[in-house]
Length: 248
Length: 365
Image (cartoon, rainbow over all chains, first blue to last red; front, side):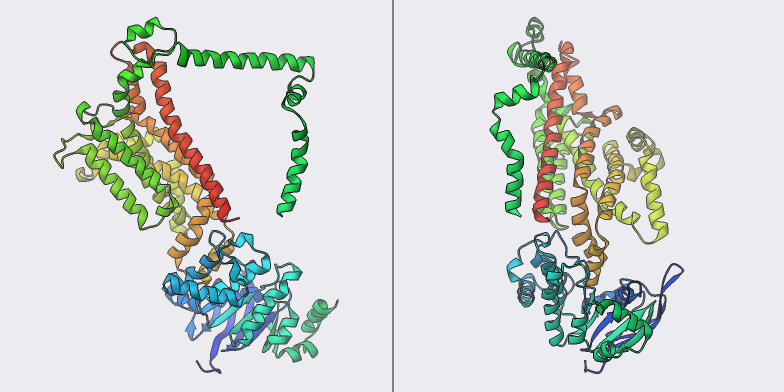
């Protein structure tokens, strides 16, 4: 895929919960290799948007194309997209009944049909990259939050995804564990991964984001380079939001 | 963490350690005159009952002999068990062929025990265990091959029949329960509503009525080639009854899973069956383990209900054991023996349940 191809194309996306509309015509284009940070006040629809990108949520209007495939009701289609799109959750969602290593080899073996030996070698390599290979035989419950989130990142990477989605990856962590997870994410970004992160870590956004997308009330309010967004926000709502989270 | 635990332990443990046994007894049981009196009364009742039981069961008891010997003695007449154990264990199965029933019973037990070992918990291994175990049981009991004489299902009885009915109920009922639980969670409203109707419908009927229907009514309603022996229809009835209760147990286990588990699984690209079999069910069973063991124990006890349909399972063959040959007055001993057999089975099940709970807790702290 050439660098300018769109990895994700969202056109006038509308999403309802019952009769309540949470996304109002959201359009977003992400090129391969781009790193996008989505931020905004709670209830702005940013998590809903990112969850629509691998169809954890259905959308009711507009189109989503991921890696050239349009997300529709064809389940085979969606499973194909999910293989190539890794996701990291706020609450890690590691499988507590499996060891760290088993968490990492499960999907490559079942979905990519890789044999156990290759899958384990590859998993160990990724665990090495997130600096936690010594915990391969542990169960998730024995790990700290930061360690669990790093394992969750390794688990997603084991599928060799083309895009990584991060849904508030540090919001459930104790403050002292945030940086170990951000370090891993920064390294990943520097490796050229296409990344979409919902996060309030503005330092991270400034450092690695190509664009910051600010959402409020189900719409994209502002979309631009981080320097522009942080130093010279155009909209009142962006200014208010920034003053609230950077105010202290 | 460890240090904390040790400290907490010491805090609780130290006062107990400094108190001697005699001191403990005096403080807890003899602190006031009334308490002392109550303690003495209760203790003497307990001692008396235990002593009477021991004397009845072991000291004054007769271990072999005739009914007349037993009448002469004051204690338990274990001679009836010795004399009639073949009838109790094998029912009406032809006397000379009872070794087949014994091995068949062991085959069922082996099947049950192997099914309890985590190594066999896979879609490939479990069916192999079941098919082999059942083939051994069926051909040994029924005969007709390898020069074994044919013994019809109506002659099966005793412990072999009880274990067979129990194992079949659970082995057919458990997969059915999983299917029902999953169907009830279906996103398609028609399917989930119909499943709910089926589950709630069966649950509102007593087991006896279901067994009667399976044994007696069903043959009128079904084409002949589908009817099969009464035994298999009754097992199907018991299995469906087990399944609807167990389905709700499993469903409650699934509902105790955080929603993120299923999401994480499908986000990795696992399809529905992979998600269900690798992520959802293994965890749901952990949550639902205590009530599951409960259901299985109940299923074992309820095998005794098939007596009323003319089956000679172990309770019925126990009845037969003392109702002839002058043993009539020694039913307590026979029932004690039968109860002991039930106890061994259900107690092992409970022990297995708590072992499983402990080991699974270790796995997923």
